[in-house]
Length: 395
Image 1 (cartoon, rainbow, N blue to C red):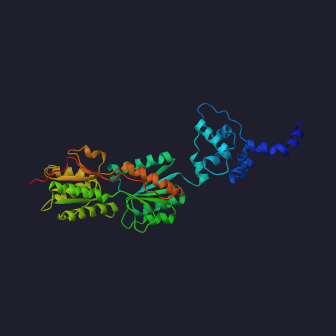
Image 2 (cartoon, rainbow, N blue to C red; image 1 turned 120 degrees about the vertical axis):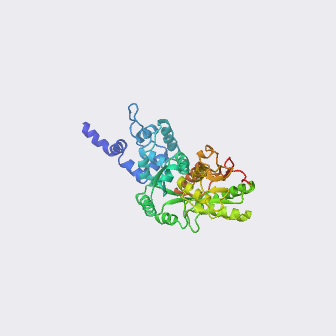
Image 3 (tube, rainbow, N blue to C red; image 1 turned 180 degrees about the horizontal axis):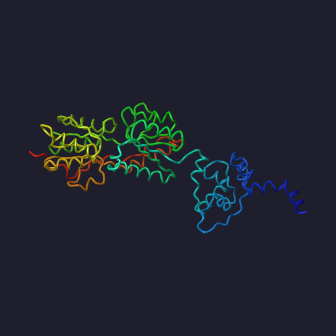
């Protein structure tokens, strides 16, 4: 009799029970197309739901627990967390309340499979390891990106590469494997191939710096040149007429921008131009460039450096030659790294709010990868910070 009653009940209730308890045909159909879920949710009737699960102390809640508490199917929970249509407002509210009550977090891997998104952005850096290990700029910038991504549920993939070929392969691999939804393009170079490359690969991207002519990749940067012009103006107001410049690595857009600003500021002030000395942003190169300038028949009375690290090394190089800073040589840096006001004498420099720049870049790139329009956030302007490393020249 029991078997006979079970068979008789099967056509009317058996398939529904199987779908509700095992997550079977009805739920699978809802996950794929949404029509049955939509009908159930929109009509207000209760769906076939998984039975509540008793969980041991310390165990993590699951999507099944959320579904049971909200009295919906697991497919409906999936629709809600992926912001898909087909769920009634009442059911959506119950799901969200259950998520809050249980403290449930969707599995990132499963969500990526559902949305075809990784919730990850990439940053490929091509710089010498010795510079990355000593220059605080990169750490501050990455920290800014992370603080911008964390509230949005995104993560950062960072890769350091030694040369252009490895760099190209890194972008191709990121695109092929679908590991990132977008990338930051930093340290833009003159005639940089990366904007065209990521466009060809179909990766969303943001240039961190000035825009590239002819590129469709949006850009977010600050005016490097204004800081250098203010540095030259400050030195000129102190009475300096022989002002040298230690450049960054050749080929970078920001290196050229700072060099051009130094030259134009000298020309505007009617001052002679000393041949600039190229370096590579490292302390060792900054020291060598300083010695080269000071070995001139007529050495400069002031030097503007392309970053703080080289300026600090320049102060050491000058001191080792028996010169006093700022009495015999005025020194100006660029970036205002945390060490700048801790050295003797404290460094006059151009300040960039690097963490804010990184945070703004993250907040600008995420909407781009989600199909939104680029809206450049306002960045703090560069500031000129006068400290004790500059003074009037000796008469």
